[in-house]
Image 1 (tube, helix red, strand yellow):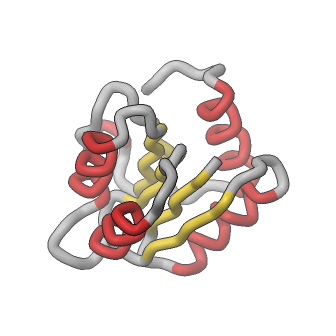
Image 2 (cartoon, helix red, strand yellow):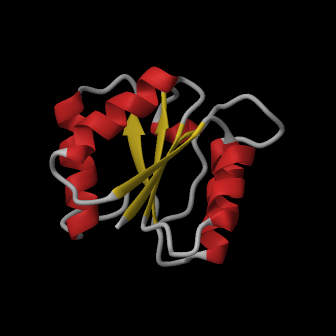
Length: 123
């Protein structure tokens, strides 16, 4: 399994990594913004199974647009968007998931764990 974590704040990327590394056997990739995430995805040989991305990031592309490009190319990929904005302010695909910031390590571990095992309906 490969997980791509995209957030412009290193502390958030590390928090997601720490939350998941003990409970998921995966290769973790990190990107600082949408452009870097798309570059990593293009250069990667295998699939990216899970994208965990912030919605608002610096650069010309936000997390939703980047997720849409990756999801279009890899429709089997699971997508989790994170934001400090409320979920109703975020327009996303029905199959995608949303996690409200700020969150605790246990919250993100539980949420993403249930998404990966398919025990949770899309929001």
